[in-house]
Image (cartoon, rainbow, N blue to C red; front, side, top):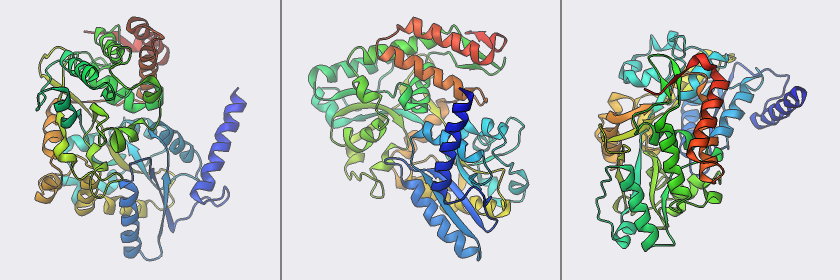
Amino acid sequence: MKHTLTATVALAAAGLLALSGCSAGDGGSSDTIKVAYQKFGTFTQLDDHMKEVKAAFEAEHEGLTVELVPIEAQQNDYFTKLALMNQSASTAPDVMYEDTFMVESDADAGYLAPLDEYTESWDDWAAFYDNAKGAGLGGDGKTYGIPMGTDTRALWYNTEVFEQAGIPVPWEPKTWADVLDAAATVKAELPDVVPLNVYSGKAQGEAAAMQGFEMLLYGTGDTLYDTDAKKWVTGSKGFEDSLGFIEDLYQGGLGPTPEQALDKNVGNLVSSEWFPQGTLAIGLDGSWLSGTWLETGTAPWPEWSEVMAQAPMPTQDGDEPGATSMSGGWTLAMGSKSKNKDAAWDFIALALDKDNSQAYDIAASQIAVRSDVSEDPDYQAANPTFGFFSDIVAVTNFRPATSDYGKISSEITIAMEAVMTGQQSPADAAAAYDEAVVGIVGEENTTGAK
């Protein structure tokens, strides 16, 4: 089995060698920096940004070439392919697009180079918010990623669909029951419309775990991880209740069909077809969603700001603070195997200077992490949702920044899928999750819910 896995990794790495245009023997080049990032479905804004930065960088750095390596893969597959690239000096990127929740584990794995010697003399660093800087820290307290922007999540809803279903607008749900009741009304009045989408199941990866499940869990008062005790939480009533919401949604016929929900492309369908065509009423989704609908997006929808509205995701029973959200974000990081770290840093610094950060944040509908961007009138005027999504930062939560999180996130999606497809009850799926967590981190690193 071990031999088969090694062979599989070798084959995948060989494919990535071909993708990156390097041969296994050349070991990279100090006059070429390789920049790896995700390009998938409707998410093309980063590709556009990188092309512009490449042109500007090469104009400023005679004799240096930027080799762009867009990885066309859904999020979890992107992480896998990036890890494979990082295993060999001949394929490892000099600069990479790095999810904040992967920074610690990738730094521990030796894939990333610390950036403190560069940030110490970078005047722009003072413009970044402290909590955004924290998102790029490794377990050793060093900086490994420079934030590109952050995000929050909430309920998006189609006001025209709501009006057809007889639901008053603006919609202000106060509890989970209010959300499910609205979905039930849509189902009764408009049977051809998907009432509510919450990403769920293994195929959706982190979109299901964070954007679906954790948006529920952190509204129950429970958490995944006890940060004071530094232990993972098991036996959580909030965990089982969150699975109960998934059961009500999918087994109650209030969401997409399991076949639709488990399609890796469902996120693209939500943004480019279901919402614009009025076939989805409500979606628990991210602050970046409208980037698809801008004139510069992949599915321009001029009327979107008149049709779509947002509501904060309520807590389970309306308990304080009344609403909840989850935040993440992405960084640019430097590969530890880079043969020209100074050039790699110059690319990162250029890509995330004030003007380029602002251009990217507007195009990709990101919440700005630089004070000079967030306060800029052009940024504030660029998208009518920026104010709403920035305001709910006050009630947001963050994923545990531990190297175990990736494995535990996967177990969350397994529990969700078992419930949404009717294979397990919420209680049984929660018990299986608890057992899996103990297997991953050890009994001594778990604690009961408070």
